[in-house]
Image (cartoon, rainbow, N blue to C red):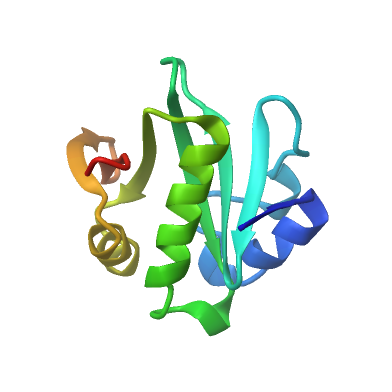
Length: 132
């Protein structure tokens, strides 16, 4: 795992499949004390602190050539980000209709902590920590 610059990270969100639910590349922030990018091969994460100490939220970007074969990279990213921040828990939110992203979350050991009901959809709220 390596820390990425914004321009390096943009490669992972270039494909239209990664620009869902209103995401625009120009909205991805520059790394600073609040945001950081990390990457492993075809997988990247934008990470930021939550409002609870020790809890960090991550958002995934995937290069097209990595789809369906990211399990090892996912583990490396989860453990690496957790170690980097000494995190108690990592969290991510996935629209319940996104079958591929939910399958990836489950395959990599994320646990469903709840569902957020919105007007147009449900969001699955996942968490992960080293202890499982």
